[in-house]
Length: 87
Image 1 (tube, rainbow, N blue to C red):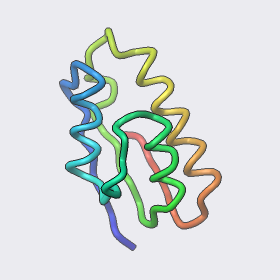
Image 2 (image 1 turned 90 degrees about the vertical axis):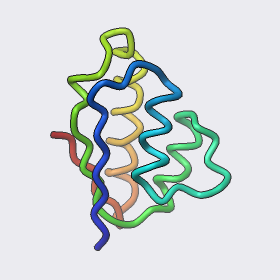
Image 3 (image 1 turned 180 degrees about the vertical axis):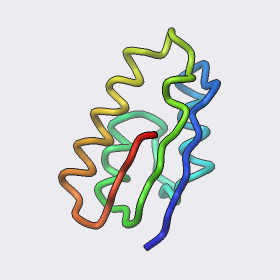
């Protein structure tokens, strides 16, 4: 099982969040750099994703990060080949 690490410490905006995800994860070419596209991509992924540093992201990102976490939690629940953890 592949293990992927995503560090969100210091993320200050939505574009930067999606940059970090695209750097750390094997996202498809069609990845649209938004939460709907992330949900679609995670539904097809296999492996283990360790997300860290989310509490160190910019406070202005709180609402978006809450929705990001919800997408990850749903993907973890719905895709038996994927495990997503937050540290």
